[in-house]
Image 1 (cartoon, one colour):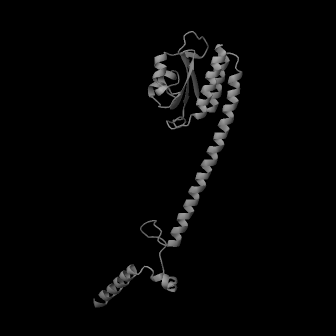
Image 2 (cartoon, one colour):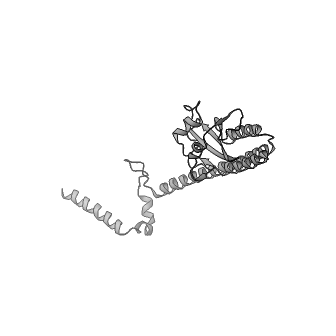
Image 3 (cartoon, rainbow, N blue to C red):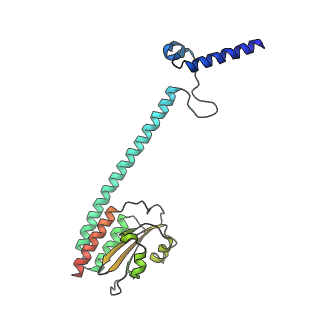
Length: 223
């Protein structure tokens, strides 16, 4: 019994001594080479060995950095491609000879630019008679745009039934664009079957630029 207590006392003494002298193995490095250290705690995945821990941490940091760089490169490439599509659409919009042709360009180009499944067009001007251009009350249309913004991404469920009456069960996310024309509104509703396609934090700078180009063209057609 005395031997066991002596052993426990000796181990406790060594433990306490090492805790108070943390640089002990720095001074006596040859001792560290003769000791055995576990790489992992048997009860968890926690790394014990300092070198192994550093290696694991640096490796994960490198992986994270590579993933971030890849995302940045992909985002940059996508943004560049989007700019090219916007430029081509701008030229087609400016070359449209009539309001009907312009609506066709808007519908087809915006569907491709925003990768959506359904595009519906609405106008609050009852004097415009164009196929595939639906009528909507000006006050109802304006109610979906806060602070006179050009785009709407709040995903109000009521908007799905209003702007996609025949396809409402397929639409999981959508965006609305408002274009001012002859004291009335032209609303472009674009819906997607993918709920992640249009999100409230989506960047719309390029799309809003295109809206301004459309407004300019509409004034030219009016004249």
